[in-house]
Length: 478
Image (cartoon, helix red, strand yellow):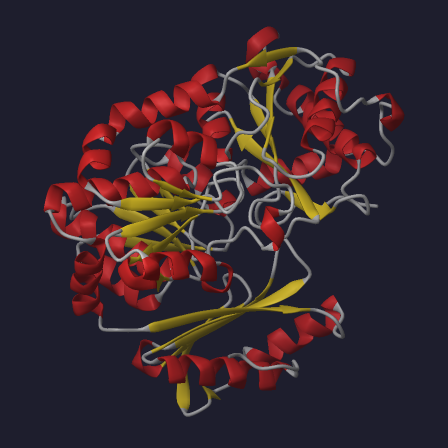
């Protein structure tokens, strides 16, 4: 099989395509890229080494060993995380701090438990560029250079280094951790993911929901969106004294929020809240923001009114991170799925860092996140955002592409006129009244994603139904 990377790494179903043999193949592609395309920048030893880590998904140690043994076989310096489970942002931090050429993070992030994945991090501390990833695909051989049966799941190969320590120290240096813990009643939901160890060490006395790694994620999908957070919302409704519950996904690079009383904030509203704090409370007026095409139009207009330049890019943080690393005028990069990066930290999504940024502003302003969110919505007007992920059960990829292209020829969706068509990634139709719809195939799963924004929940649901009808997709949105 040919291995292709999507919007955020290569992901596949465990034991079907995500196998030891295929992990060995991809790793050889990484090493060949390092040696053949980056050879003039490498001088051996640490400068050419690879750092490897994993989250708590099934088979993590086995796949880490496959990466390490392959690098050793090919003569490429390699070390792996001392901790059995690390977060993606902590690995990215260690890659940059330690001067490693490449980080390999074995995680499928927010995908269901039957997936695993292979993320690549550059020396700058964020996802490798699309160009680098395409080159690695090209260098990936058809057969593994190391026999898969030689890889043991319970043997420590090579050198191990601590990853979490320097990352946690950086968080303590940047944020008033003790003051936050003393003055704010908040909870943390790890979704059985890798973030639990970091947050337990930072805040041992807060309420921790599911503070342990579970390879099946308790039977749910570790993505911090409404349908997966019913338990956290119910817990918050039973504990009105708690101001906010921070949530991170499986590898803790994305975040979600549940406010007092169980009010779930969509990622679009979290992005708005972050920029509201930067513009209103930090008085940052001349920044540049990189937003994926799936980010709210209302949020983009609010940012522009605050004096910022907004640049739109395709979905996937690999389109944001290299640009942030090269251009320090880009202050924030954000994507609809809950990933936000800050120039002052890393060109990388970091759910825990973003959560601490929000708690810090609660502390400094003396206001709850609910109050701050209401302030921001007072500027933009209330809006409703929905995303529906529709499995491709009956449509082929080719058929889907044809229908998406036809979708881009519409002059109206329901009662609303199409004012502009954006084909940066999939097809995005901007409608009158700041409504919009976006249709694009997923880069990580066999799905088509439908994104809509309306002025009311009824409008948003109507837009989803209209899009599904036009695409000929069965089912409905609740």
